[in-house]
Image 1 (cartoon, helix red, strand yellow):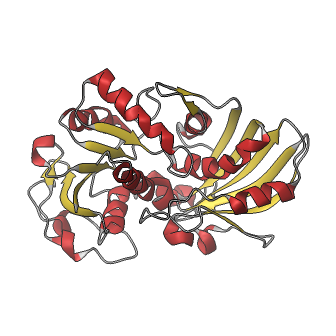
Image 2: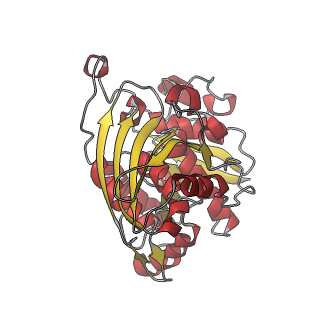
Amino acid sequence: MIKAGILGATGNVGQRFIQLLANHPWFEITALAASERSAGKPYEQVARWRLDTDLPEEVKGLTVVPTKPHDVDADIVFSALPAEEAVKIEAEFAKAGFIVSSNASSFRMEKDVPLVIPEVNPEHLGLIDVQRKNRGWDGAIITNPNCSTIMMAVTLKPLMQFGIENIHVATLQAVSGAGYEGVPSMAIMDNVIPYIGSEEGKMETESLKLLGEFDGKAVKDAPFWVSAACHRVGVLDGHTMSIWARFNKKIAPEKVKEAMIKFDPRLSDLPTSPKKAIIVREEPDRPQPRMDRNQGNGMSISVGRIRAGRADAIQYVCMGHNTIRGAAGASILNAELLKKKRYL
């Protein structure tokens, strides 16, 4: 078993890491790291468990440790740290020899840091060798994208063959994406908030790196642009988005649907990988968060309403579980790919 630590273990995404890593066939939770005020106490005493499953028995009595490399007994650490803390702490862990599989945004757009979705761009792991050479680290940092970017990029990957010219996307994002105390109930009830700080910029830049080409030294961004509008809505889990994909020639909706149905990245040897990365719904009113967010144990992206738009565009709706597929599950799937590629 590979020893795994979780940084930011008491937060919303940290708890998802614990839930998904409990009884994992490859990883064993050996360290839970959090703030100084939590350090030295059993996890069950300092964490207010917020998920709809019981707190796993194997972590209840684990003593929380400070978020410092010499205190964490692990071969790989999963980071659920806030971006402002991750920028320093993750670098310290990588320098100390740890593999860091991060959900934080701090290093995603660094030229020598892999930003990876295993079904989309596994070859970008080659940036680890570039990173280690550039920075002199024994360890490395690998990142997964923003939660909404993940859903969109997975659905765009099988459409790259048709020649994408530009993408417009409007998101309806769940409150869990802001953390447990991120959106006050009086702000979101009976309301839509048409702004999520930095979210639009992340979707517009991260997707181009993800869908770009790696030449062995660097990633060249995909040759199109993305325009995003992001909104917070009163849904607990599950980000929904409407996408307008414009191509350099007219593409029939049936061709797009066929490409998504046939999309098969063959990751069946990775425990967290769903049987189908994309599930195409035929019903006119699907996907819906409450009905579809747990497809593929929360790791599948559901797509529906594929239809022709104006000016050689295709319109469709996609939806995925933001704290599983869009956060903790994405980092774990990246770690499984690292093991497969013998970086662990």
